[in-house]
Image (cartoon, rainbow, N blue to C red; front, side, top):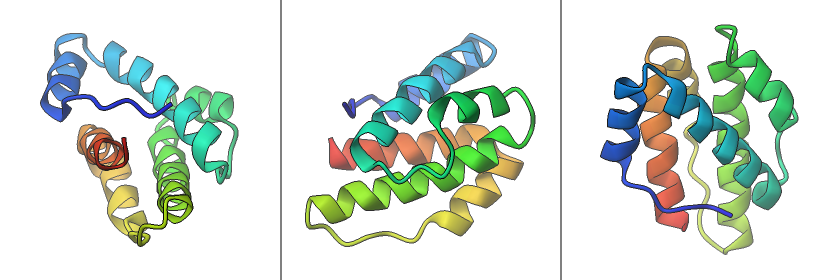
Length: 109
């Protein structure tokens, strides 16, 4: 189930815990998006394992975009094409990717 969380709190907790909270957030988000969107290219457990390698946020970005658009379509909303933005942020600045995905989840929750 998608949970409405404060984006600033997610960022601050990720920084204060040296990324541990962001890993927990990613695991919960991957499972929730996969359960509702069912458009993941890669299963959540593989996405989580790949987070420990640099490619993980790139895979998460692709799957999150696909699942968020699937959820929007299920609810009769227009899809957003954030794939390129999510990919760039997954490579360059993953914490911003976390913030944008949480913001999109807040809009849907």
